[in-house]
Amino acid sequence: MGRLQDEIIFLLIEIMRDKYTNDPYTYHIYGRGYYNWILHWLRGKEQIRRALQELEKIIKQGAELYPSNKRLKELKDIIFKAILITAVNQEDVTYPVLYSEFEL
Image (cartoon, rainbow, N blue to C red):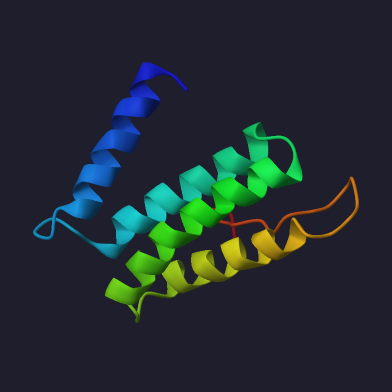
């Protein structure tokens, strides 16, 4: 990743850790971006599964903090499905797509 992406990721993580500026949208931005990055750049089911499991931990934390947030619940469900798909013994698998409200 480039320097700008690294700085953005660092800022998002810092915001998620700060209990005074924390909001569900930050978790959604981080989760959606990282999910799309995983599916686009990583190769090999084991590498994808490990990255998805790490992402799942963060999104579960956000979903627990904001249980009424529909976006986080949807993201959590999609990540869970994607992890299950990594267990399929096929070369060509289709991972769930996470659409934004602008793409619908």
